[in-house]
Length: 77
Image: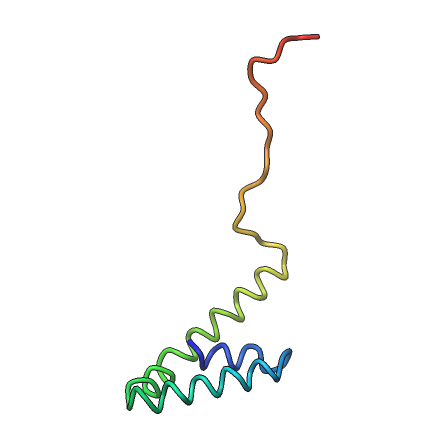
């Protein structure tokens, strides 16, 4: 996930990307072969999903349902 985050924010926030890269390398040094392997396998998939979500939100899609006001038991004036 950190690999995808690093790539996703690298164009807009280089400072944050450098911090994420440092964290990713630190975790990889402690976890052995599992961290780089999962970055290589899952990273591109997560990056694709993040970019897809960015395009979706930019197009105006939302997860929130439309707001409505239901009036019940109001007397007629």
